[in-house]
Length: 308
Image (cartoon, rainbow, N blue to C red; front, side, top):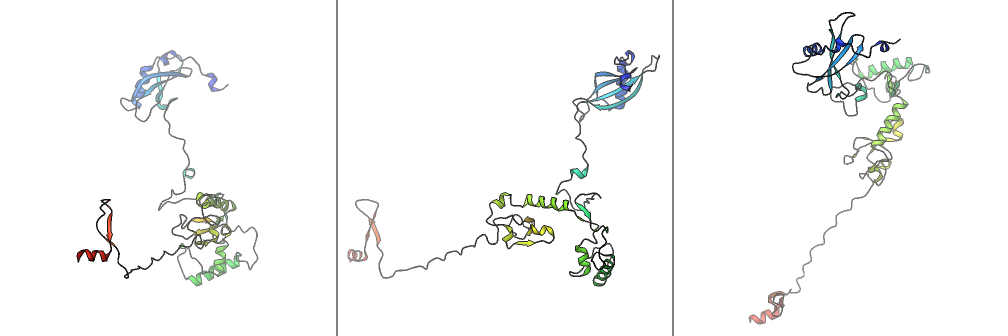
């Protein structure tokens, strides 16, 4: 038989009447003036009753002070068991706690922040597990790895072990770095796909900018190619006037800043001024008598005869 079935549904009379005792216990546990009216009681079991009091403290709307009282068998003295603050049916509660790893969003990190990566992160996989032993002359074999380390130390000189060293291009150490030998983990296929989906959603062929573009980035002179498998579908925009400047863009993306979108026409040159010095332009002297506003033009000969 469960504990719930052994509880009496009828509250014990003496425990139910101990409202003042329960209020005193609530006022002792709470701040002064925050314990309100008695709002009910429930039977917790044989000779065990919980009294509820309204909580008037700011920020705890709908909460109740719960004071549990009890008495021993055949005893007439009621004692306080506990006094706690509990949420009521209409209490204002904090939202469910979510781990920080699920609350984190792109752009949340700032200077000095550290973002630890789980050991079982699906976006990463071991750089080289060693399960399939490579040939002795392979760049990822143990002998070649030791040679790469020696060559790297000889070329770059002695450096602190905690500082990363980038080997010269074309050396064995560079090949080992390219294959992920000296990286504990590299991007997994899942990590590559999620990155590609994220980049294509931001700067892909289905964006409004790409739909209105005159051509795709694959034919743009401002596109900088990237290596690896993602280089088959993405590049970096290097046009400072493009909205995707410095961003990874899909080769099918495009914008109005395409290098071959249009050729800027040269501004037209104004025609040289023409001055005709072989004739005399008419010059109005007085308004016409019939209109009152339209000037009458006289040529130079008539003007000279009038003044002679």
